Length: 381
Ligand SMILES: Nc1ncnc2c1ncn2[C@@H]1O[C@H](COP(=O)(O)OP(=O)(O)OP(=O)(O)O)[C@@H](O)[C@H]1O
Ligand SMILES: [Mg+2]
Image (cartoon, rainbow, N blue to C red; front, side, top):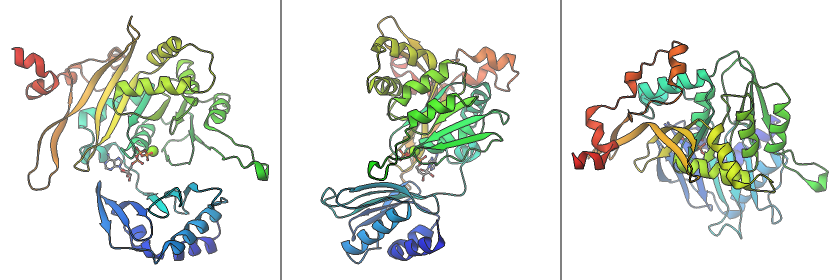
């Protein structure tokens, strides 16, 4: 993109320039010209910034759309795009947006988080992080699950960067967000169709199909939102162990159901029972991300998917869980810890045969955690 455009965008976004430049601001939410909220350290605050009027706000959004070859107008009232610096922007304009032009900017951060940062932020315990590291090395098929803005993409990036450096990773995303550090990475991005200009759409599904022919060792789908779920499961089940994706779901069990629902979208001829079995057998691990009310983003569960029982229910067992034990009265921050749940994953023998530094004893929960993990048992005792 020409720097003339970059300068133009900067000028048009002048009312929020200080927010764009402030590294502590991770997200900017504009609800019409006179109401701007920001997220800092996971918490949302009202900012004093304002656009002069709706017209000025609309003009800047139109310019941003234009700079990425798109249009925002009455016929195209929604925009999902990226700013020149890699930040993500989503826009909806009136009359759909009742507050006036509504915008969210997820700021791009040069400094990608790593496993160590996840430990420092309290998102993972050192053992939880070490365990995930071992699973990435072994190539466990993993789904990162979580709500909007819970840290799924960040987690996928962290996990992807722990894969063996020699493997060929094919990454497929709607908008290239992942920056996985590895030696052999191939990255694909979808294209929106524009029939008027003769541009055909290239979907995640199309790209997964191509990726499978490009000799991948592992496939990573940034966000599984449609029938590509089926393709990802196929990849996982056909020799691309260690493939990964993210999905919107609130618990590990929901993530399985969600994946199943996505597979059934469209016109698949595979019956639901068979799909459920595919999900149960292809998927091995779920990493659940959660944004808590205190602003903290934590990994709430690391779970194993064992399959489907005779009643067609998913069997999911928690390996690690984050447990809240209290709340700091001054800061309002939750106090808690990620603990092992006393369950040894079925692939533990691979840890032993590969001499991975993670002894079985690390799956044993600490004494204090038992009443949280097993509240009914404790009461009965
Ligand atoms: N463990 C963490 N600790 C602190 N901040 C985090 C953590 N994980 C992610 N973040 C921050 O939270 C914001 C949202 O993260 P991310 O984009 O990974 O979420 P997401 O679940 O992929 O969101 P979406 O649903 O919109 O795709 C980013 O600003 C990111 O830097
Ligand atoms: Mg994401």
